[in-house]
Length: 528
Image (tube, rainbow, N blue to C red; front, side):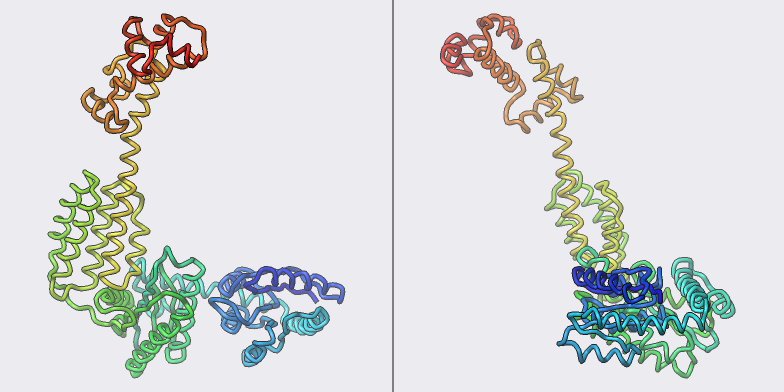
């Protein structure tokens, strides 16, 4: 009896303990080839797709996707998968619901070694019987099924990204999509959340739950249907008989209702659903997708939780004029790096857009995206990808303009810090030059040549950055060095005078007295 096992348990300590118990089963003649561990249901499903196993051991209660959901989806990937459910006593009745899914093995926590061994022995016997009867047929089936799934997903990508227009024959022969019924229709699902606040694992759960609910609601009433996420949106295509057109619309409404009903489990997320036009021509599927893409953008004015199927005409928003004015005014704000002025520009843009009667969601979204792209390019920031992604998940005009305002504030702060650093650089260079050459007869002009600035500009900049003029700074550096030499060496006052860049001892003594309050000789007596 040889088997590969996948343990699904959100508490790593428990999972590792179970793994140790499994390794002890070898004493009973059970040969475990691999023991894999997944922290949650989503991760487990990905692992099953990549490397199928013989036995799944799962906890019943886990965040995001519970054990029963995992079993349903795992059975789709590996129909012959053996399963053991583990559960605490309080959830024992809940675990027994798994019997309806064909799971006959459950163990109560804390797991006992002898009970685990006996359960594995029975499962091992069943696996041996299946493998001897089926040979390699199951492995071949898995490969072919995987290939079909990849081709069907490729169909969605081709339709969405390449505007591909396949015939009904091509749908069936090239992509394994059944296209015998009269009608075709495309849908788009948009999930609203902050991609920076939502973990990748949580986003994956949202996508998988959306797919699950789609097939649950539509698959039994369509000749064929297909759903998956492409880029930042969920896309679906359906093939059904003409007489069921109204029924399909009702089922799509139910799909949206169930998405919204599951929000408490999925986290801070909202959903909108848009449907494209019904067509009797497979080659018009791309056109149906494009209509749904336009319709889904109307959530900006219609709000979340709506079935969107109409694409209202443009409002007449003078988008280019508004953007030209924004860009011109923002140019000045960026030039002087004035955050308040930049914020005012953003507010004026918002007021100009929202004052247009019946302004459409797609118009608002495109205006904000264009303004954001201009701002990003103008301040020479990195790629606008993150900003655009966040805008794509917004569900209202208020959210869109908030993202633009946040972008302006963050990039303006970065630009201010960068400019501050740039203005400080020549001052640092000048100070370094003074500390290296203070013993020489250096001049302001010499230092300006070194840093590459004019005398007037450098003098103003130096005083602004340091709070004192260049001549005073040079004198202070020289006097500080003179004090050090007086305290720590036996050099004469004349020698020290020369070492700190003075040719005239009298001038040096007068300057020193002005700074220290005593002449050099007295300073040495006091501090030497």
